[in-house]
Image 1 (tube, chains in turn orange, green):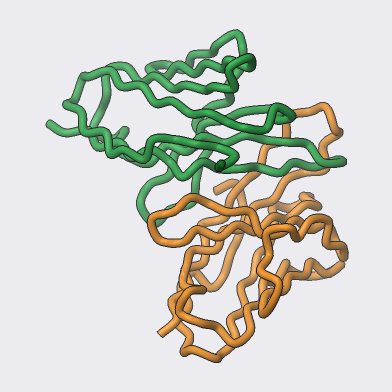
Image 2: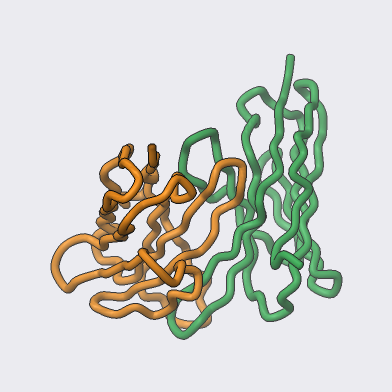
Amino acid sequence: NAGVMQNPRHLVRRRGQEARLRCSPVKGHSHVYWYRQLPEEGLKFMVYLQKENIIDESGMPKERFSAEFPKEGPSILRIQQVVRGDSAAYFCASSPNYGRREINTIYFGEGSWLTVV
Amino acid sequence: RKEVEQDPGPFNVPEGATVAFNCTYSNSASQSFFWYRQDCRKEPKLLMSVYSSGNEDGRFTAQLNRASQYISLLIRDSKLSDSATYLCVVNRHTGTASKLTFGTGTRLQVTL
């Protein structure tokens, strides 16, 4: 998986609890992406972050979801007051800071499976 | 209309068969194109990039038609291990990074 580490791999939460998913990108990668995959569906872009900045959060639900990528430490995807519909696989990916004209290669982590009961 | 559309399948084929998947994309600003493979409950993995000139990697051949906004993947001599979901992916550069848009995938089941 080219070194993107996600944890926890599996997380069970009761409705109303908070879920925190962590992602450590490939060493030296400064771009992090979060994708969500609902059961039997494709991956949907959620958010793109660079260190300390949110660049594109057009795929994030307006409420309860937040993401950060601090200067030190992993990227965190936080889901507050989880509901059953949040049950999904959450994939993190990272890429290096390529120039605009280069084809970027994005490396995926193994995913975090959230189950809300 | 979805930005990337694929036939969900499943495609059930016998070992040794040739199978082709198609994909269309709606955003003409898309700049690069890929096929990813995803096994059940695993992360997607890059299978191959797709170029207008067509490209081949062993039993796999990918083709891009920019005018028709159409991408294809051909698998020859299918193996049991090819059973997976194949994701068509388009990429747009935004600033200095990329935004990948995934199709919902086409499921392939290769049988004995």
